[in-house]
Image 1 (tube, rainbow, N blue to C red):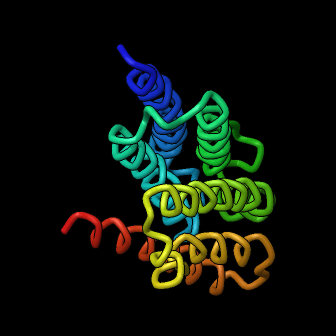
Image 2 (image 1 turned 180 degrees about the horizontal axis):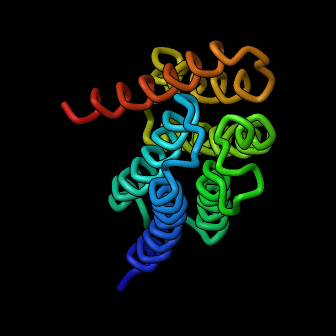
Length: 188
């Protein structure tokens, strides 16, 4: 096995743990669905974080062609990025019943933490994107499509400070749509 294959194994493990945390929390909520106060924001936020987990795992595979160019420091930054994503996955749904399974109240108190973590993730992700564009001699992409990595960060920053519930739902829905659209374009 080469370094990249070892890295993919560790990355897959971290992403798998993040998705498992979401699945366990979601299972607990569905099991107690009668006493859960659901919210559209919570459901879409879970979709954003889960989608980003799968997308991150998917993106790492594209590095296999240039993996021999990476040092241990690159892999450390990648692991830190995945750690942030894991923290986001752990925070997107409640683990305990502190709020009586009230997802609206939960997200009101946890929203700044969750979206600060996701903002840091998007900063790291965008930084890696710029790095890959530069080393692959495609710097013109930064000028032509440079907004694409910035849009999730902008949405996450709005979600930290937005006071209006309708604005938060609209923003998290726009974030999910933007993430799906960026990967839909990459698939074709």
